[in-house]
Amino acid sequence: MEESRRHGDLTSTEVRILGCLVEKESTTPDNYPLTLNGLRTACNQSTSRDPVVTFADHEVEQALVTLRERGLTRTVHSTSNRATKYRHVLPEVMGLEPAEMALVSVLMLRGPQTIGELKARTERQHHFDSTDEVTAVLDSLAARADPFVRQLDRQPGQKDARWVQLLSGHEPTDWAWSTLDAVAPADVSASADPYGEATAEFYDLLATGHWEAFGLQLLDLLADVDPAAGPILDVGAGTGVGLSYLQLAVPEAHIHAIEPSKAMRTALHTRLAIDAGLRSITTVDPATFEHAELPEQACALIASAALGHLGDLERARLWRYIAEQMPAGAPAVIEVLPPDRPLSVPPTRYREIFVGDHVYEGWQEGEPSGDHHMAWTMTYKVRRGDTDVAAYTVRSAWRCFSVDDIRAEIAPFGLTLVEHEDCVVISH
Ligand SMILES: C[S@@+](CC[C@H](N)C(=O)[O-])C[C@H]1O[C@@H](n2cnc3c(N)ncnc32)[C@H](O)[C@@H]1O
Image (tube, rainbow, N blue to C red):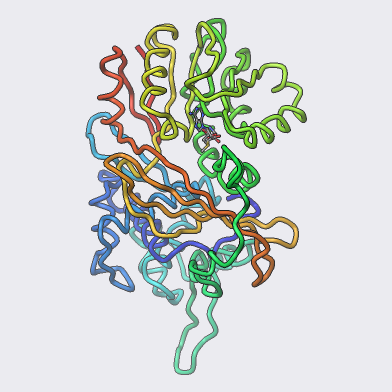
């Protein structure tokens, strides 16, 4: 986990989902990763859960969107079975060993428990030889700089003290979403680039959770790319968070970074200013994909969190470019962001980070706006203690895609795709 992230800000729904993913990974490995249906059933189980809940599909889906934003879960698109599946990445992101995961997950699923209860209830996930061993692992989880667990004070009449997880239970109650309108929004009315202007300032701090896992995946997906075939095309490069992964994946390649937002490009250029190596290989194309000066050939293409921003004609240009100007087999990696169809997503804080004396928060809220589109409302808040220092709200249209939607759209161009976690790789 990023060092500036604090535990404690997950919602109770997110915690239940993570607990279930951890539990099912070891108790029913044949059915893991879990489908949406399997995950909802696991959450709503009437045994081994406290409290018992009755989540609907859309509640689980909404929480999966924010868990993925936080970089805590991954989407698995299976080639054999069309159902989308979900898995957690807690060991990688939070640095948890199997014994620690077992204890944290049982605390997530069943609330505060004694050492004896924890030893018995983790048995199917991990065998502890003694209650002393359980205590030692809990003590080390409690002693971390950002503790995962805490021992509760023993209540009168209780023989043993109970332990509690600290991943949730700190949802903000000191301000309501509706108070947001009282804070002056940034003056973006005169700007032709409201999304970039509101977002760029906070993008690297708040909106790059997906890169932690996606970047590593790119190293694999681009491993066989031949840099002699042309540059890597980065469509909607943003502030350039992904550039160093592209450089690492194909060290000899040049990068053609298409980015229409001046505000996003300002951050991108700052990145290039302080990294001479990246600067020497990156050409910045200040245009939408529609108007970009596309190189004659590209050895690979990447569109990370960008496909939904492209209009119908731009996507047609994209598919035609891959079909006609990329060598056979050259990969076009297109990130597929959830949800795969328009969905109502309530205001959700997806990230929080400390900057000096201030806390920066990223919030998102989504509403369907047509058969394929969602209207996302992104809000970036800067707070000092209980005081709102600033809040910037911006709306952004996004075209939702399922893997099948993309498959149907690229077929007329003679393109096929292979599904991977959170992305598809298109080629011909
Ligand atoms: C969510 S950001 C993703 C940035 C970067 N790829 C990443 O993953 O960090 C989406 C980017 O797409 C850019 N974008 C929006 N419309 C675009 C278009 N028509 N053509 C190319 N890029 C576009 C935005 O300006 C923004 O920087």
